Length: 95
Image 1 (cartoon, helix red, strand yellow):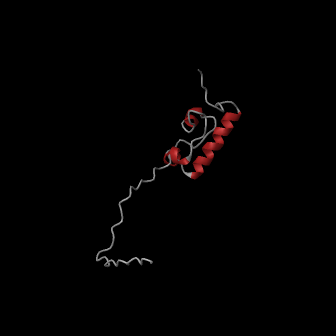
Image 2 (cartoon, one colour):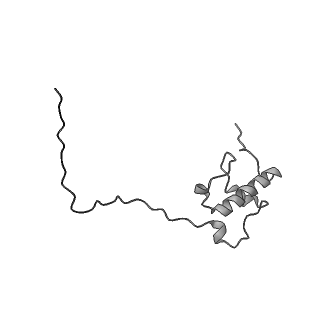
Image 3 (cartoon, one colour):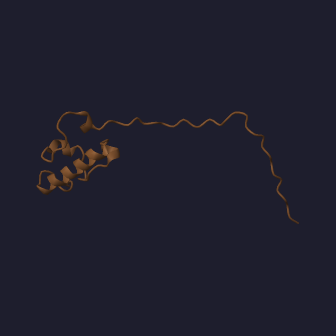
């Protein structure tokens, strides 16, 4: 003997469904686009250290809040500075 499930019919909604509110994060402006400091320079070690993690890795755009153009320039400047030994390649960890 097979049981047949009885289909339940719902009445159509009278008002449209409300969409859940989502947190909208405003885009943060790129610090290099805002300032008139002249842009990215591989010799400016203090500025470049702001975009390197404690482990010595280049931080991503979502962490640095840079535009794509300046993120490419910063990563290229960091690599140049590392190559000529202005910035270390890895973290300086002493135990």
